[in-house]
Image 1 (cartoon, one colour):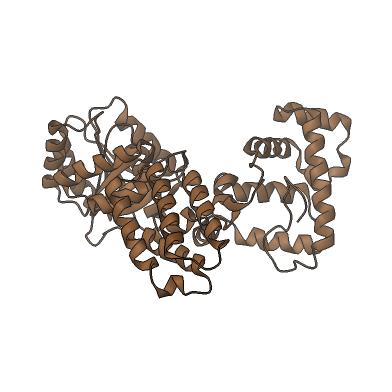
Image 2 (cartoon, helix red, strand yellow):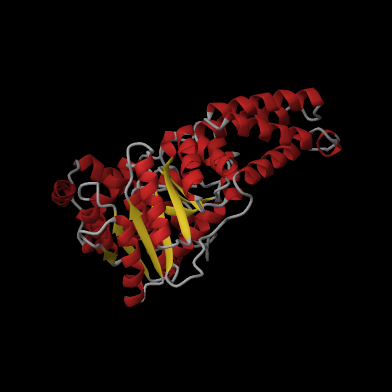
Amino acid sequence: MFDSLTERLSGVFSRLRGKGKLSEKDVDAGLREIRLALLEADVNYKVVKDLIGKIRARAIGEEVLESLTPAQQLIKIVRDALTELMGSERVGLNLDHRPAVIVLVGLQGSGKTTTAAKLGLLLRKSGHSPGLVAADVYRPAAVDQLVALGKSLEIPVASFPGLAPPQIAAKAREWAEENLHDVIILDTAGRLHIDDEMMRELEEIVTAVPPDEVLLVADAMTGQEAVNIAAEFNARLHLTGVILTKLDGDARGGAALSIRAVTGAPIKFVGVGEKADALEPFHPDRMAARILGMGDVLTLIEQAESKLDQKKAEQLATRIRKNRFTLQDFLEQLEEMRKLGPFSQILDKLPGVSKLKGTPEVDEAEIDRALAILRSMTLEERLNPSIIGGSRKRRIARGSGTQVRDVNRVLSRFNEAKRALKLVGKKHMGKRRLPIDFFGEPS
């Protein structure tokens, strides 16, 4: 999402680093560029003005101008200011009551229903017993969509046909108590635009079942309009937080940087994909680091620890040391890495990747083809690739919907990888990650 902003800011700091010592004039010139970059990213004008004022007040002083590394000091000041702008610290959910009630609100199309399911899955993984409540009685198939999502994730869904949304909210609490759910998530109706009727109904829901959380689900792709929407919802409902969806798209980032300052409501989660587990807790400090091209290694580590099979990783390390790396091993590793999301998102969290000139784009389609080819092989073929001759290659190609040349490419890359692993296996003994890039050059 922040690619353009990150590139602009990286260019500013690169020029400042090249100057060595900085003058007040140099700082002002750099701040002008930062201001333009933020405005182009669709950050609220007043927010930008206040932010630049704070940065300048801290930057024009002995700490920066008399420092041996003034550009680095300025980067730290900007990072700290961006962190403060987005809330300084992570704000979690208030789940003190039993059952805790979370009401999701927002415009139609913002992703409330899928976000309700994602949040339910996240809470279940955290040890809670969530239940979903279908309180959108207006949008065709809204109830059916939530029921289907709940079934696929094995999360109970309550619906009460014939009742008005405020009555559904009251009934939902009773249902949660009877079924021992400690959290319920209400998926409310959205509209194409904010109107008095919509707000009045939401106010009635909040009155019927005083919620622990009122979370606005806002589409980050709408840019500054998401901030205006948040301000209007906050004026009527007193939001406790915001969930920004579609941060994996090409939104410019203005909403993420402006919402907290304009409404006072913290961003609590961000949606980063279509899959059910593509909802991440929002950490202002980590987001600020990503905006400045410093990556987000902590989030990547947390994802790896929660999603990857550590036992498989240890078994792979043993096989690499013994030179027993097979196509079956590689298939399992690709499937494990897919749990972390698209490879482009993984690279986005690595520090410095955005600054590398000529970094090749990750070809997700090539990875998908490789997975299809590997899965089209028999277990015997994956364990003993030497038996794969011409007829087997043709069968594998037909089974995976690819060409024989694609099968040859995967086998060729595998042989290169195996040779590289044989050379460096001892050197990387005990490390869990692969020391080569299967889709690039050995490292």
